[in-house]
Image (cartoon, rainbow, N blue to C red; front, side, top):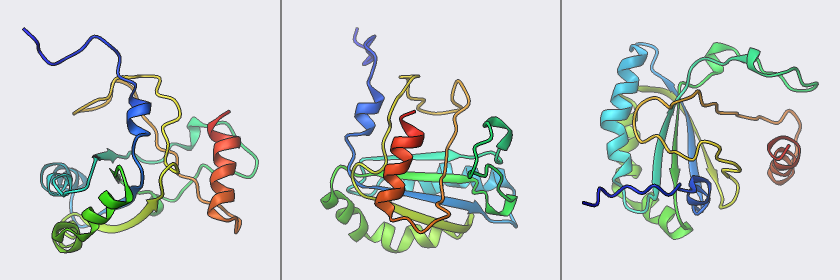
Length: 183
């Protein structure tokens, strides 16, 4: 009997890098609601609405704990501290295979009206970033076992970099790839 599973390892980095443009948002939950209420609503209601829109290739939600500046060695010129109010609690990430898929998604009535209106039920503040193809990359996937639901088998971290200088997006991206990601 075929269970649909395979003993062959899936190259999740290649799979994720098949995507073109990506939309990544940083979400701060409403302060007048408990965090677990916001996270449950995001997972059980809002996420399903978002994930069903035509054009979307992959959608994931990352729940964030408070910043841990003690995890990293000191690096001159980099600050690992961030005030609590500046730290988001969630990151939704939508991937698209092409610009045409992104346009189909953006022209659909759900992301134009219903999703922004629904977000007010649990999000107090949001900031979004549209990354062109090849800007968001999985460089190495050491686990090679995507967690479908539930907590990951080991801690996962999201690194967010904000330039202090007025470098162009291209210069900043190149610096991060060459001096942070690859080493």
